[in-house]
Amino acid sequence: MAKQKNTNPQHNEGPVATAIEEQTAKLPSDLFLWAALGSMAASLVLQAQGDRDRSLFVGQWAAPFLILGLYNKLVKLEGHD
Image 1 (cartoon, rainbow, N blue to C red):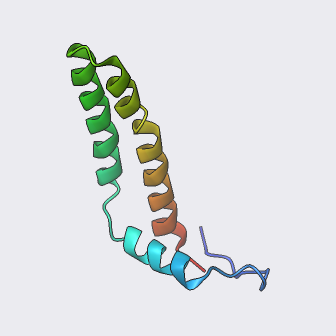
Image 2 (spheres, rainbow, N blue to C red):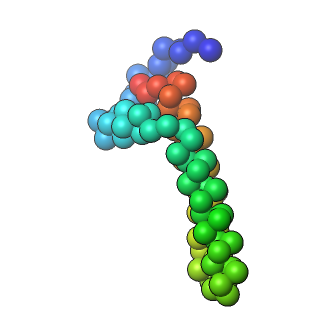
């Protein structure tokens, strides 16, 4: 897929967003998958130890890690403005 020219000149990313995207693009995509799996494993261990509240808290980290991984992949494929 070819990168399209920005047709809306008022919609440019700021320097902070550009810097964040440049740094996160350096992270391997597997990192986020392993973080999600690790949070699920930690949740399972906490559940087995009887710490239900912490287990639920840590188990809910998986979805944000996967979303961050998706964002990371999009930045790598499409780049930034």
